[in-house]
Amino acid sequence: MMARLKKYLPGGKWAVIAPPYFWMLLFFAVPFLIAMKISFSSIQIAMPPYTPLTEWANDTLQIKLNLKNYLFLLEDDLYLKAYLSSLKIAVIATFLCLLVGYPIAYAISRLPTASRNTALMLVVLPSWTSFLIRIYAWIGILKNNGLLNNFLMWLGVIDEPLKILHTPIAVYIGIVYAYLPFMILPLYTNLVKHDNRLIEAAYDLGCKPWQAFLKITLPLSKAGIIAGSMLVMIPVVGEFVIPELMGGADTLMIGNVLWKEFFNNRDWPVASAVAIVMLALLIVPIMIFHHYQQKELEGRLT
Amino acid sequence: MSAAKTSWFTRSTLLLGFAFLYLPMLILIVYSFNENRLVTVWSGFSLKWYGELFRDKQMIDAAKVSLEIAFMTACASVVLGTMAAMVMTRFRQFPGKSLFSALMTAPLVMPEVITGLSILLLFVAMGQTFGLFEERGVMTIWIAHVTFCVAFVTVVISSRLSELDRSLEEAAMDLGANRVKVFFLITLPIIAPALASGWLLAFTLSLDDLVISSFVSGPSSTTLPMKVFSSVRMGVSPKINALATLLIGIVGVAAFIGWWMMAREEKQRQRDMQLALQQGG
Image (cartoon, rainbow over all chains, first blue to last red):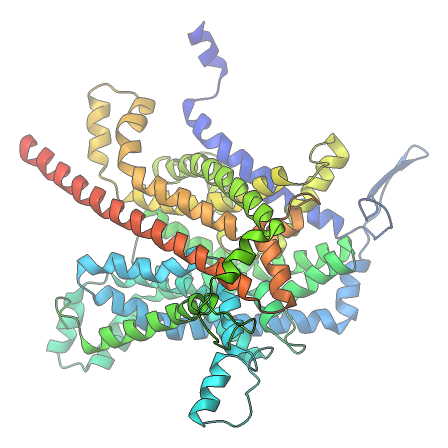
């Protein structure tokens, strides 16, 4: 009985592969196809608020692919501006993260082995508390009558409060603060594996510390830099919470545009088109990230 | 530069880095005990905002919904994530492997607005076609959360699995144990700490999620981040400081216990391995 059953069942290997595979296909991959489908339909006042793509009438199957939503994204320069400004903010914020994160990751990798894990945990710990609350903390610090302004005025450095909250500077501070651990972790994983003898050899051959860093450490940490940068840049392009709470009228980001199209205008087809275009922009960075992540998981390290 | 002695550069970088990471939170905690309604003006010690927080029934209800979802998400993500991690690290080739690994890494970076919108559209489409998920709420949030948490749990467990000494598993296999038995008797106990940190990671990710929940929630299921977000949008309130302090306190204590247990188990593991090696040799 069991033997016969076994013949019809796929191998035991597939019993392990199938559940996660099926779950991610159904709830992660298929939704993109549906979003793509809905991006070709038009808005209608009903539930759900979009028209079907296919119609069966008079023995003919009609498929209506409506390109209006994509044309609309091209016509109204709000969308183009939002995409460009999101990309710009994401690139600058990623660079700032790298600038702040690299020295920290490097310093942790230089610590004695016993204290490395503790230091690493201290880096990750803030991201285990709430994301919203960390942003909220900075609002209290940066706002007009906030702590930073009060402190600077008490010092006498400034007479008028500086307007920092609701400017791009606040958005950059928020992003760097919230995403820093994602930059530090892959950098650390890379840096800690470096062979110290290479640096020592460079010193013996007369290299100055900064030369050794530029010629050896930095090139060797390329994989970590790329993984960390992708881990920060890709989600930041679609970031919603930080620009919403810390940005001002001049901070235009595509995540907020999508949110407004969906929740305020209830235009699901345009929101879907915005998402599909964003996905198309991010597909190359996601593939680069995937390439490095896979290397990491399979243990083939630089 | 020897790694043994900590240089001046290392010290000052870490000091500045940790100040940047922790000072904002410290300020948040201090001002939760402020008596004044204005968050940044200190006028005396008081616990009244904690009282206000616990009397806010909506906030308490939202917290309950969030904790329930986070618990269920963490459990499901660890099961699926362990399976996925075994697949990634142990199964060399099978048809569709590259798609499988893409499905496991893409959620790590996918902007939440895209994931949230897409999965909502899936639920709506399934509602139309099969009559499933017509009522959105805890169930749909749970599915959406498991979907993005599995990827994170898989990373945590895979990295443990790939550094694991395979000879133990091979030895058990040579002695006649089948793959299932080897997994439950050898592999699972060794990776248990990674399962625990994967569980906690999924729990906190779920507890923290605002964007995806907002897309897939129903009228009867407001989560804690959704409630906090709408109240932060209104302006700064000491009640949120009190909530933040409680959260930071809980995470701090949990992290300390986790760190302590992991450190102890790591030591134990190394001792066991050494003992096994000595006896074997």
